[in-house]
Image (cartoon, rainbow, N blue to C red):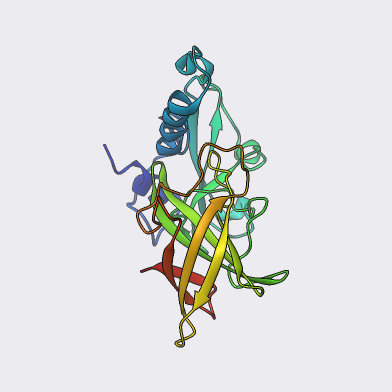
Length: 231
């Protein structure tokens, strides 16, 4: 129908979503079907020749459960998790204890636009935090499988690096240099190149705000929030 998420939220929260009696729902392709499709497409394009990735990556099923706040520390929530390609019953307690549990919406924080696990992914710098020898600036950018986190680490010695923290497929790290204009926020990135010389992806050429030939980019940073916007 297209409004299942709103009905699921409305079944557990009186002041959000669309009032309903929905108790759960399943989504073929996993809880984040767009990311599953993107991962399959990536494997088909860049994976091992001769492998049938359609069979190697069977469709999982994403189960969505509205969780009453009485069972979740006072916070109403809509959670989801991926299962093998079959359905079985779960209690609320089992759902909340499921590995890889994702929160689609909760009454404390609203919608989770990136549909990511709440724990910070390994290697990701928390927004607003300093890193050793510099500062990290992050932004959510549109990608093949939905919004993805982009991070620029601007080091005190004038070097920088670019990466996608926590991305399930793109793990490359690119290094370059940078300068900052007199306004203190306009940053000119130069010569981003893959730190792995053996990688076939020499420059970060998938994103329009980064020159795929030179690895150059211009961003504007927010020094308080430690975020950036592409210019």
